[in-house]
Length: 393
Image (cartoon, rainbow, N blue to C red):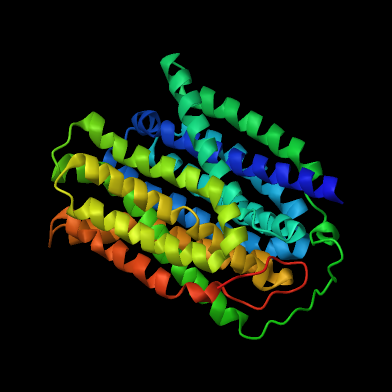
């Protein structure tokens, strides 16, 4: 049993790395794809909404499907679809083809996102201790690998179609290779735990929607760092372009390191503490960055912001998955779906606010969201069921 769980955990790591690598390869090739399709930045911005729409639809479809067919079946298929769809943007030569390609890629990404998180919940249930945050950290590691590989292939003059096609083939092969190690549903629980598949569902829907609302707010905060941290240093603090780029690098590094450490902290102090104090630290970090007149302090603020946020989202996904064993996929899809919308909403919300106030002052909206998350962290506190991780105050 222990060997089976370990193999399932390693397979889950593989799918998270694969997902981060596939989406990272798309991001690295955005400028080349844009040139090939003959479109400008404004049109690309609208087309990226199709990527998000496809992901949202995929999440809502595959969540219940995972509950019905099992993650062992759905995860490899979703990974194969996501990998195969990666080549499509590289082949697009006009706006219509690129729009369809991004819709398909987003759909595959959404399917893989929810199904692999549902399987991660099964693994965590089997270990009976927090392991979710490390999976999310390996997604970020996949993105770093994509940046390194993409930079090398671009320097060799490879076309987007050639590079993305090769990565698609490797992705399909990796998805198939990792599939046999995924857990069977009957093994996805702690040794000695009863197979209580009926569960107590009373009150779950309201709790799931609260978790989803928190995911929306916190992933909007993450989206703000992704989209505006570099511009903040460049436009507000007049930092050189090379220095400004360090803002996102500091945030992303802190997020990755924090997620690698968060499981141990959650095992000792509980997920409520991770969300409560993590969101509080994030609010302090972003406040420091927003008010700082000095570039070094702003960089430190973005770093603290990333460290604070790092463990929050995995706790929400984990809580949603453990709320009801038979509806884990559907519950994760609700939380992930609204969270994804929050990340996409970052530019749409912050952009218009910059017409009313300086960019750094708009950051107090995500600060407020972090404060709400800290105050409502008790939503993660639920009666423990046999074989599931115990929550703490």
